[in-house]
Every structure is written in C-alpha cells, then in structure tokens.
Length: 130
Image (cartoon, rainbow, N blue to C red; front, side, top):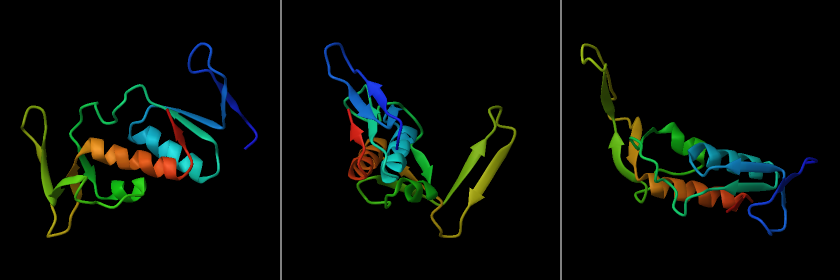
C-alpha cells in the first residue's frame, strides 16, 4: 500500500507508521483489522480498554457470524445454541417467532472469549494491537 498514517499515541513517543488505523477493538474493529491485515496492509488497532468485551450486549449472534469472524463455534465461546426465538413488540401486541427443526440458527456466546479469539485471528493475520 502506498499511503501511510502517522500516529503519535502519546507525547514523546516516536511515530508509528501504518496503512490502516483502526480505533476500537469491538467486533467491527477486529473484523476490519483482520481483513486489512489479510490483504497485506500494515494495520494498527487501538483499544482503550485492557479487556475486550466490556460493553454490554445481548450476546446472541447468528451462526453465520462465526464464519464471518473466521472462527469455529467452540465450547470455550458458545454458552448455548439457539434453534428458535420469539421477538415481541415493545407493547407486546405483536410477536415474531422463528423455530428451526433441529438446525442451529445462532448462539449465546461469552463475548469476552469471542472477541479475544477475533483479536488473536487479527494478530495472526498481521495486525498490531495496542
């Protein structure tokens, strides 16, 4: 790549050169870092927290998210398999129900473990994470 980003993380630090600067180690940032590094870019991913996955969420993902993240649904990440669900409108007058006959549609995950694995894959592809 021909473009460089000059990054000074704090006063007195020498500059860091990279092609792609990713801010935030959430699912989108980790995916962006992995994809760019896989294409040969020099990637620097900056995350403010020492531990990934602290932002609360429902921690339910579709089965295709594992494929997109380059991961397998392993027992250290998956807490529960989802074969169906119901979604209710806020006033509870309407609901949508999806049930699968035996096929796994998604997972309830340990978000910290999932993001840790995503970070490992990004670093294995060549991204640098600070």
